[in-house]
Amino acid sequence: MYFYKILVQLKNKTLKHYYLFLVIILFNSCQYFEKQVPSEKELLQKELKSINWKEVDEFPSVVDCEKIEDKTQRQQCFFEVLTQLIQEKLSIDTLSVLYPELDTIEVKVTVFPNATMQFEPQFPKDSVTYDKIKIDSILKARLVDFPKINPAIKRGIPVKTQFILPVILKVE
Image (cartoon, rainbow, N blue to C red; front, side, top):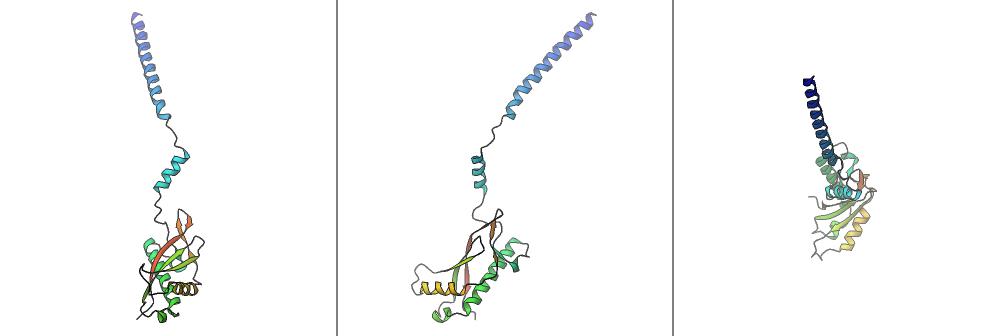
C-alpha cells in the first residue's frame, strides 16, 4: 500500500510536469501563428518590382511565324517577314530615285495593343541632307495594308512594343 501511494505521487508529479511542459509549448507556439499578413499595397509593390518591364513574354507575330515554338526563332521570323514586307513596299517608290545615296533606312516600328502599326524613319541627329518630312510622308503612304499582326503579350495582356528595323532600299 505504501508502495502504491509513492507510485501515485510520482505519477502525479510526472503528470504535473507533463502538463506544465505542454502549457509552455502551447504558449510559445502561439507566436508562430500570429504572423502578420502583408497588406495589399505591400504585395502589389513586391509584385511590381519582380516584373521585368523591359521584356515581353511573347513578341509580336504574324500568322506565318505562329507555328514556330522557339521564342527566339519566332521573333527572328517576325523581324524577317516585316523587313521583307517593308522593303517590297518601298522598292516600288521614288525613295531610291530621290535619294540615290540612301541605300538603307532605319525604321522605328511601333506595334500597338490593338494590332495597328506606326512607322517612323530614323535619321542621324546631324543629318540635313534628307527631307525628313518627305521621307516620312512616303513611308506613311506606302506602309499600309499589312497582314494581321498579333501584338506583343506581357502577362497575358497585349502591350505596345517598339523596335528599329534596318531596311535595305537598294538590293544589288
